Image (spheres, rainbow, N blue to C red):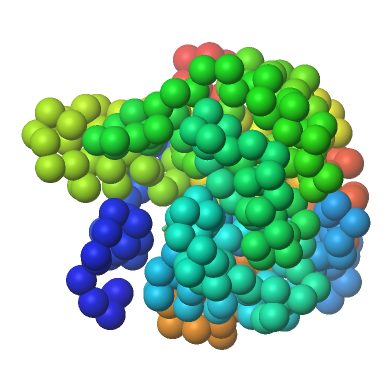
Length: 349
Ligand SMILES: Cc1cc2nc3c(=O)[nH]c(=O)nc-3n(C[C@H](O)[C@H](O)[C@H](O)COP(=O)(O)O)c2cc1C
């Protein structure tokens, strides 16, 4: 629980994500796949190692902490606890959208986690649409410099903006601006959806724009449509948001879409990752990392130990799964495409 009543929309969004059910009935798509268990794995469980490398950083597991917050008291606390856990477990982390701290510099400290996490791969975050609202390369450098980030991640959220009363809805001409920024900014640029996924066309556009990586932010996890529907005061706006609750490309399919557009682009699967098995499925479909937001939110309010506890559970589940597949590490796991099967719909056999 937040310790006091929400004072603005950002606080209200956070309060809703903490205290309400904001999952759609649509799934992230991982339930359409299953792994082939090996009763004779011919492997010692103690030998399973899920460490990996991403953008030159050694990680204890193929996991990252997805962007969530900043800009308020609770946000600062959450970011700090997430960063402490990320530092200890050698995992990457992103802060939430920093737009608010460019507009009001006194809020910058609520995003600054470098002291607690000097070594982690750290992602800065802001809406790509800000490139149409006065932001250029200088402001983006400021966003990166504010927190000493290694990567700038631009989020795409056209549906969420369209559902807000005063959303930033001019998404025209963004691809060219992203491409220019990718050339002009010394920091690598990732692009992510927030919860509606990446289509084959968007994947191709982003690859051609020269981004350094993509986080698919697919449908099936936290739904901003549900959140915006709860925030809306106008009845019609509420109904419109509700009609989009299950809209979007599931995370699993989004991963496939990006991998078809590029075999090698660094790729993160966020959106409805709820178990080590989901992590494994996203990797088997082509992702390099899986991102977690909602599962870490309440634990992050409580403290770094609670965050570590959740992350350790995901890591252990992943290890147990690899053990049951007879794979000692992620390289052998990812190299064997026979481990993952898709359920064949009834009637299609
Ligand atoms: C409280 C909260 C705040 C979020 N804020 C941001 C944000 O500022 N920028 C962003 O790119 N994504 C943001 N997201 C989206 C998440 O990073 C993630 O893509 C989405 O929640 C799906 O993951 P999940 O199903 O694990 O929650 C936020 C999510 C939550 C729960």
